[in-house]
Length: 433
Image (cartoon, rainbow, N blue to C red; front, side):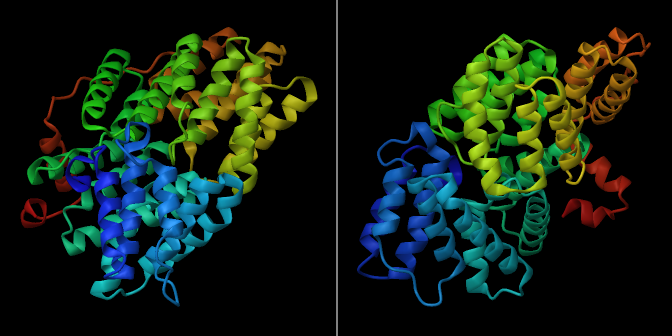
């Protein structure tokens, strides 16, 4: 049930199985508890029966880990700490778990160790690196997981690995690459009878800002996951809606969606949703709402301490600041984000700084920031934010022509995937495989 439909009943079934296994095989019971934690994360607010805290408490009260602990054991214990004790208390354990997974992925694993790696990846590392704002680990884990899954032919895991890698490419502004990976993941899921992963396609649609298509996809996804019980996608769908409307400059709608996204702390998405909430709230004249969200965001970014995390905090804090303080914070955000791979958020920081500079009547300075943002968003295909930057540039007195795409032949997703593989020099046999 968990592998095929990620249904809301999976946490209860897996937790029951773990309890039955405990007197028979402690290691297998802990494996199953990790599966139950993962199922509870996917079920989120729609879980039928045990939620994340109940499953995490069962894991903490379950069989003790062997000595030395396996990777599965490190992950299980770290997730229990995070869920029960909260982000600041759990962040060190998460870093340890992430380090162990990265080392395991680099090693020449035996068949048994590979099983642990797949179990661990399917359940937790998908949101682990983004939860810690670690773009280096995200790239390494995503690339490695896809490579190993292809070599081993693990079709139960490959779509998830492809989706995970696609989401990384969305954040680096490589939308076409992300789309190709999404198409491949969808094709594999459909061919094997699994449920396609909608996660990255929702976020990509929001960045591309084709409003009617994006909203139709979001609404149909919400209806589908409600019926299936995959509650984690509800938060992602609301985050994507907030992202879409912030890009379009429709801040009231963005604020409403961001509030809904932040009602439940879904692993991997909550920090992103807080960022959208802060921007929308400040634009809607609700500084108290933005300040409360900033406190929650800071709790996470300070604990993480990565360039990505500190850049997002500085950018968000600048929105609630004035004068020299705001100026310094925007510069800090650009400096931090310029040192990591998360290109789209660097462009957003420069867009916000450019907007702020223009309102301070510093038009020449604002043009530099806005031009960078416009070129980055236009090149990636982030049309909503590109239009926002273009409007601001025009307000500074600079003439900017809106980019248009030449008409291209419409291909199916499979035809597009084949064309890309052929372009990259693969043989017919390789493409067929």
